[in-house]
Image (cartoon, rainbow, N blue to C red; front, side, top):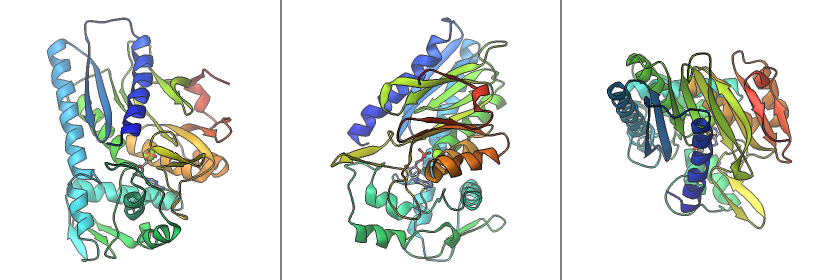
Length: 338
Ligand code: AMP
Ligand code: MG
């Protein structure tokens, strides 16, 4: 894990964790456990009788690890196996991965390709999330990598259980949805075990089960993109997801310019215009895909997208620090700055 990024992850994690703890009176039946998973800190908080809570926390962490083994881009996974077979026709894959890739392609279509799960060649080049240092590639390298991207060149066949990457050198990077897909799965596990109140925080992206206590939602802090210890808002969430894409999560500075991990699929360079996009949605995959896409779309097109997407709210912070809200976002938010 990149050390700079690791330090930021700690800060982000503490901010979100701080808010969640502050809003709770200490309670015998609130159980927490933390683990590094999916390239970030995952903290599971379950409110239940002790043994049941412990069992639930373990089951959640195991399930999230299983998703990591399915989707990781850098560590050996079912995804890396499929990527290695790019250009060899239809490849049989785990049905769960076929379904997730299929879902990612739907979001690519709905967002006019702002969300693009085929940016693997660019991800390798920039190396924001692998081990070692990130680097600023030459333009010619970016153009070569860009030529190996394009979500329309991926096909899934759910009944045959296959994924086709049309050309050698192409690769899927599901980093824009995998982490919060694992939160979808975590929430499913908690509900199956009969847990009625829980919160899972994966590096600031949060899934919530039920209310914190009767009549009281969970309260989740949203980090200030330019102050790792500050909050711009606190959201009240019951049974749902709050997910942020930001230019402060994985980045480096070169000659005063910030280069970060959310890429514009048209140019191959980091998307410009926003510092962060925070999305509140009923499912994790939806929240995560949309947060990445809206970040790429920018203020105007991003807000238009949110306006025409039912059940999803969000707020954006532009590169001057100005906040913009979707029509229903303020129902969930207490803005703490500006
Ligand atoms: P998020 O923090 O959810 O916005 O996800 C960012 C991650 O998604 C990056 O680290 C990449 O792995 C991947 N990614 C970057 N740009 C895009 C994009 N335009 N569409 C889909 N995934 C992307
Ligand atoms: Mg995302």
